[in-house]
View 1 (cartoon, rainbow, N blue to C red):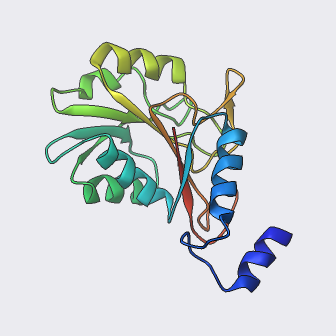
View 2 (view 1 turned 180 degrees about the vertical axis):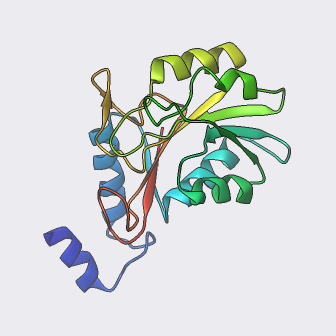
Amino acid sequence: LSTLKSVLNSGIWNLSSKDGIHIKAESEFAKYIGVKHAILVSSGGMAIQMSLRALGFKHGDEVIHQVDTCVANSFAIINAGVTPIFSDISLDTFKLDLDSIENLITPRTKAIIPIHMWGNAENMDKIIEISKKHNLKIIEDCCLSIGATYNGKKVGQFGDVGIFSFGATKPIQAGEGGFIVT
């Protein structure tokens, strides 16, 4: 709380400040998640867009994610010039229907975005297996599950990229903001 107050009282609220508070935040968040890098961004949606662009995806490429999620995911994918492909959810887990994903994969499919919903991690073993079989990238959407674990490791460690959000409906709310982790 004291760090937040000092930033608010400083009048310098952007990442170009000379005091480096964002560098400390990135370092501490990376350490908390258990990854090498964390980059602060303006939102979870922006984290998805930037990740897709950084991975080199282009117009005509497709990304599979579950249909039961925030519309911001699809908007971010479209804004990056990529096509969202919707997977059904499992009636047992309310997460990706992992048995149907392979039916959606085409030569244009470049990634799967598993969404760790409401603190419940996806079956990352199966997602990694499918991704390796079809040479797909994994972008973990951890926006609703900061701190959740799978097989003893925090979500965000399993994919090529993990994204987090601190928007109004997230477990940790800061109004906006997010992280990309690698």
